[in-house]
Amino acid sequence: RVARFALVHFPPIAAVRPFMSRRDLAGLGDSNVIEEGRSRRRSSVSAAPPDSKSDSGQSDSDNEPSLTSARGPKKGRASGAANGAEASASKSGRTPARASGATKEGTSRRKSGAQLDGDAEVDEFDLKPRRLEQCFGENPLLLSISIDSFLERYSADGAAAVLELATSLMNASGLPDASLTIADADVDDEEEVLEALITNNTCERLVDEAQERMIFVEPYPLADKKTGKRHLKDLTALWRQLIDKTQHEVLFDGVLFPWVIEWMCAMSQSRHRGVRHTGTEAGMALMVRMTELAVELATQATAKQRQASKPGKKGG
Image 1: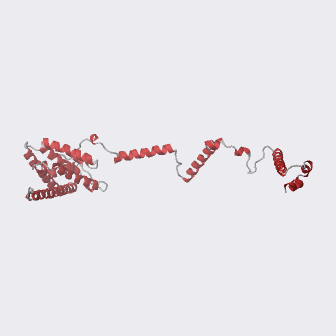
Image 2 (image 1 turned 45 degrees about the horizontal axis):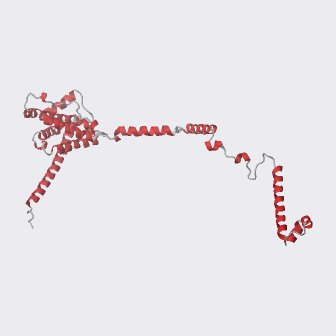
């Protein structure tokens, strides 16, 4: 079969070399076929123009990697896209978006502003005591610090501290300039000073003075629609904390709370609605916490009595 293939396809070679083996003829035929294919490819390459495109339809320059594509879009295209975005934004009435750095800066400013509004943690050592009514609407820690400072002043001068607490109640009622001091009494004894000043007449005198000078808050703090609930919450917290801090000693001294309750009763009978309302709410908060404390103490006393009445364990 190989000889027949050689005679059919390569008659000149078969005639010249008739004595070649089948293997030689097969190898000779293969080499000629390979050489013929190489010559055809060379001729096709030389015949093609140098700037012609490849079979895929792209030129050689398109096949080469582009430096501009690796580095990013050209400036002209980027600026044109940005100008187009700003133009479309101006037509639609919207402000074009800024750079990411400006956005981050604005976000950080908003966060810092939110922290300054009350989200930031407050250090206890940065707070200074104030008058009790000035702590309303502020950090709860400030009220606790101010109560501790008030109790220190009470230990130094009981009568002056009681009058200070009565003044705070009047200021919290909407009379910011109302004031009670020992100098308002003509006596020097502590008990006599309190008896002379903690009266219904004194309460009405403070109200009349505020109305004459037109120095009062309208609406009064508890009636304010925006801050009334917070004011009531802080007023209640004042008396609850004051009782909790004095339940082991001052609560039972017979000076501070009896006179404060007397002043609340005078306020609850005032003609001024704000004074009357504030005195009533303060008295209710005071009595509620004192009732709760009485129940707690009674429960503890009962538990101790039961424990004491149990017989001791017998030795084995």
